[in-house]
Length: 310
Image (cartoon, rainbow, N blue to C red):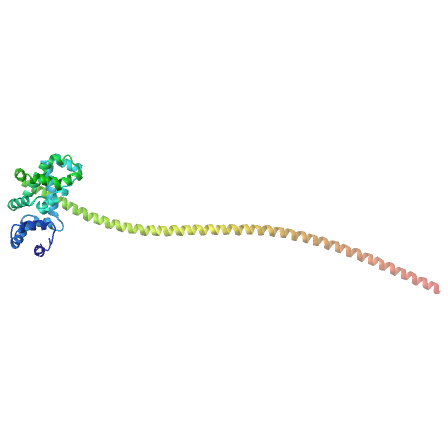
């Protein structure tokens, strides 16, 4: 495994290939096993199966599903009704060439035919297994089918290995249809890749829009806060203005009262002044009359004295 990972760095080490290597090492020396592994990878479509993209595995699953839909339609419909994907039961079959699903004897026999006929025989064995388990599978749900593929089906075919191979050899695989499926899958992959590119673009655009939306929301929140503060400030100003107007109105009332009181006081002062002037005038007249009377009395006394002297 280490030698092959150094030999083919693009593929590197894959866990599934270890089961194939283990089977080869049981049959031949390490050097021969390495050489056979290289040929299996390069000549039997297995290299693309173990690439990081695993595109070949996806193609095999697509082809197998199409064959099942054509040759065992009722089972295909049952799988669909249970959302039971082809890869859920068949991916390990193709990645390990059944070394993890069946016993050593069956795995060796499958490997022998595989080296002779290629990947087509792996499809035939898959269809044969489904035909053998068909009646039971049609009565199971998804979880039960998974368990059936892991335990009961392998035990069933191991008890009749010849029956499995006879049935597999009877399965017909149309090469032209396989090529057509390959082209269809390539078109689907291309479309998916284009959609993925578009999806990445949309996600990136969505991320930018979200970021922009967050900025706008922040700005909106700030503006809303400023608006609220402005409204509060205006409300406070209006309240202050109302208080000032009320105070001014009160001062005006006080001013009017004081002005009225002042006018009343001025009228009283004017009245008092008139009365005072009248009193002064009366006093002055009385004083003049008194002085005149005193003067007349003096004259009369003087005349009286003159008369006496005479």
